[in-house]
Length: 146
Image (cartoon, rainbow, N blue to C red; front, side, top):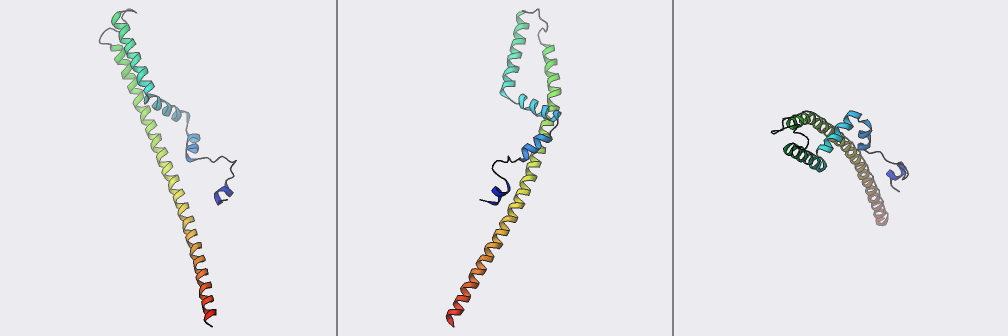
């Protein structure tokens, strides 16, 4: 059984840096992340494309009395408004991703420092064992030479 297994029993769930970061996020941050994930998906692109096709088709054939005649000024206004809100939300999500990356890098650094210390301790222990073995061999040789 390793030292890590002794410190953290198998039944104990280990909380990762990502779990801690998610717990620390506010409602607004989670909304920004969700919105950015949605807007960066094929579902959004396909849905928006279908919406535009439906809008233009209904306006061109006059099925509902041309509420937005060509060149579709109302549709352009909707897209402008969407872009005006989408850009800052996406930037907030990118800032949060940068925060996550910095936090992960910091956690990785501390893990690496801890691993380095453990490796150095192991090297010292191995060197002591080697020295002890060499001392014993030297003593055995000296005893044999007498």
